[in-house]
Length: 125
Image (cartoon, rainbow, N blue to C red; front, side, top):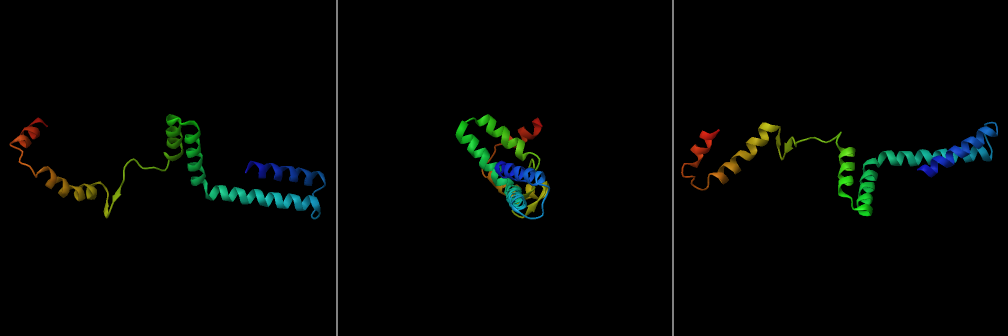
């Protein structure tokens, strides 16, 4: 992208020095290099997330520095991420998610006799 920018800037300066003609070699060079730069810019804007992920992966493979890698991931992704999931299957929100998991865990934890331990634990709370 930087190469396209440099070429477009150089062609623009040359076009301005020639008096900003509306046709000719300078105009065509300025027009084409500017179009190439805008195309590259739009590509980068559309594929921003993938380009960032590729850069992080390349950085990790080249340096093997896990701390810097995770700091970069945190810096890039923290503004859009949520701390907790708010949807699991068809359950939405804390209450529905808890209710969804209540029965499987209730049957799991109550499958073995507790010999009075439940009352002891509840008495400690």
